[in-house]
Length: 314
Picture 1 (spheres, one colour):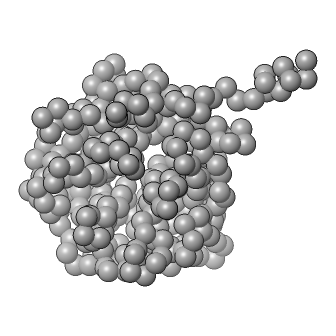
Picture 2 (tube, helix red, strand yellow):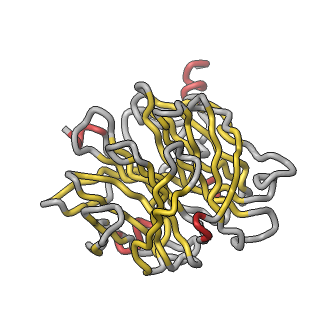
């Protein structure tokens, strides 16, 4: 009887499948709190960084680890708020992404920062570093890249090790890309407008020597139609290639919004689309949408699946 009661109290999550929109539990049975995030593969382990959210508050950046992408262990706070700084309690720390610099041997985190009490007026990029992948990360600075507003963002490291910051600017009308300095800690002046279509939530990846960029429209917390652009060069020209989503509610991105495209280590041409299904009334309750990316004659397709596993990539 005691064993039966324990089983009833154990979160009902199968650690061998992805179930988009379902509550996702960590290895201790707590719900994952890692929103708007990105994933870094490092020495055989995946590390998922994201926003720690209360009902509405931004509470810093969490990090979880996994060897198989199904089962996640909470590693702690990668970056916590620091009173008396730009990242004090009451600020907004959104869409954190972490990359590794082989030259400096540092893990570098960038995120979108809004200052306490300023709403979305600050529109800054912010940078933190650590010698350890799980942190804690040391906050360095926030700024507007080359004087440009910087809101929703992502990072991308190309095959040659050069890193880039992709960001929404000009009140979200412009999507821009800037090459980072060799230490990944700042933007260079190689900073270009990709297109001006009022887009946000950029998720960039590379497949067969071509670059693909998924973005969202700007409708607040309400879902909208995703779009995908493609280019032979990161600095363009970028060509609009329609909506990559297919299936029920594809025109509103399955009620979600893009945040990251994850290359699956050890599997050729295997990518996972990662999105957030935001719950504006309780941001902590926002769900995660993981879906496989497929290619049809180099066209990208992301179809809704109620349940799936990594065997789709065989």
